[in-house]
Amino acid sequence: MSLYFAYTPNVKTRKAELVFFFENNRCHLTHSDRVPRIPLEFEKIDLNTYKQIVAFAEEHRLSEYEIMLSGNEPLEEILMFLSNYLLDNDASIGLLTSNIDSIDLNRELLERFGVTVPNPYIARDFFTNFAPTRQKETCGSVKAGFIDDAEGAVKVCKKPKRPPVCPGSAEPPKRKPKVNINKTCAIELDESFYDKFIRLLIESGKENVEIYKKAGVTRQVFSKIVSDKDMIPTKLTLISLCIGLELPLKTAKELVIYAGYSLSRSIMLDAIVMKYLREEIYDFELINSELDEYGCQLLGWHPRDN
Image (cartoon, rainbow, N blue to C red; front, side, top):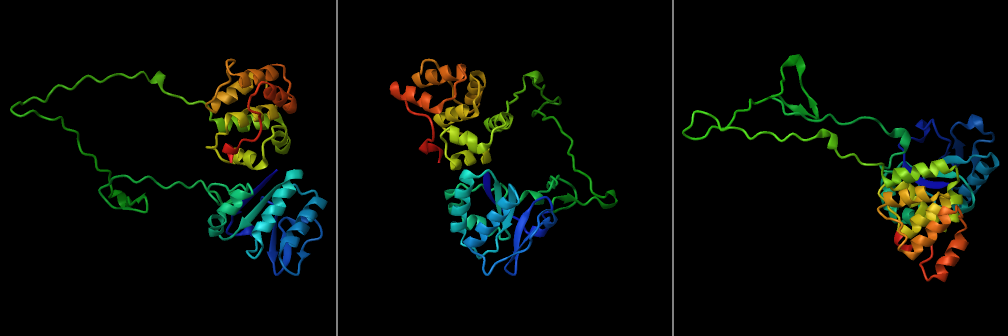
């Protein structure tokens, strides 16, 4: 389940996706050979148009598709409709725009409805592996990051290193011995919290909606965690997600550490949660009931995560 918003310069080049797009108040679908009864006709493009598209997608069991905005729709009403629809339906819907400025113009609106915006904004079909050539200091000219080496005329300038000479001395000063650094002690980082969490999410085999509902976490917060690589949820929210994922105690403690926290038996809340995780009991209401009995903060959504 997801709702995202991205830029694409030409919807007809998106061969890998099912995309609804508008032409003269008609709605067409790429790869329409897979689905009958295309195009759909509308008197005008409004909220009702999107309701019909979603109904059409449901009828033909399309769980992943995109809609190219015409630019005249009531965007706020459409986002409200789609976000409410996805609360109870497992689907992935993308909204595409040919105006890249509309993403920044509607940033606040997109965040309000928990809409994911990829970084960069461009839809994934238009990513390239091009990387600018690193400039080098040359005897010739460097233009647009490329070295003009026609006929081998351009060579990299290398100045010979000369040891400094002390005044009044014919011999250069002795160099200090180099310190040998043991390269086997190079620092290697573990996988990030984001990578660890996404891997556990995939390994669980559970639907996203099942996980965040069981954890008592809002869809907006869950969407932010899975889309923002720099997002670190609060400890309470993270423990709630461990319960939603039904993680064993050892794995849950590892995930909490990856986020920079820890579970300690000297803290009542942690001790209660670890007791249930150790016994693999993932009854959210039962755990919160005991936390409340001991005066601990309850698990679930936390305002700091918004």
